[in-house]
Picture 1 (spheres, rainbow, N blue to C red):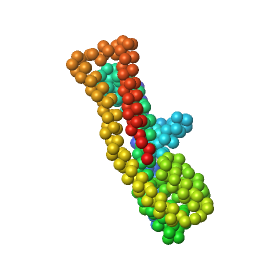
Picture 2: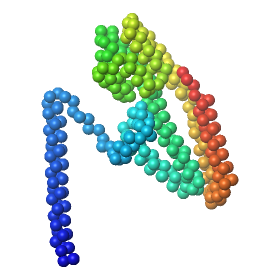
Picture 3: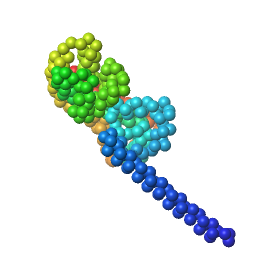
Picture 4: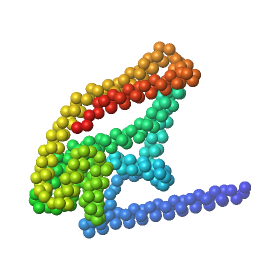
Length: 313
């Protein structure tokens, strides 16, 4: 006990020394990093991308080793989202907990459990929707893409050079996807494999037709410029047709969302007129089964309305 003050002073001094050493090592590493970036800029080499600092790196490393994490990584890769599998899983878990407690407090604990299960499905549906949105945006850029390819090939450029030029001129997502194709071509991949991987990432009829045209023209030759000009006009017409169909079906899509929201509004109205009614209703097995069946019928109605309003152009 008499040596406790000396021991405290020694531990404090050791912590201060380690802190000073840590700051020195961090400063030296940062200075080396800045010097490396300066040398690369002087030699004309591209600087390292800054990017954002990703969170939950330990969770991400452990998750990538599992099959579940690899599946999530593949799904995120085709959406264009700047998020790691670890961040996605942590955000989903946090959102599910928030939904469970919020819905459970507003309605009843049983509804919180159902909302969490629906949120778990919604997390996967969000990735599917994000991929569909990215594919739709890429399809809208296809007429401009084919126009750039036609102009480049008419000027005598090779198809690889024309794809690299299109990657530089077009905005995202077309620019990012074509840059990936150009990188694959640069490291030795064939044009068939690079474009086939692009069609797998963003599946659509228009892109399949374009990839088939480019692959056949690359194999057998022929009038590539004429084919691309005709394809550009066709894609422009399909773009306008898709826009008209989307406008005509907007009311049906709103109806598919409004029907489940009306059901939730009725539950809130019942619980407001008679507080505790939802707790009593879900307090028995029969009431819980009735709620599950009702939610299932709303889900079936939602999917049927969405299915009937899905028109492929």
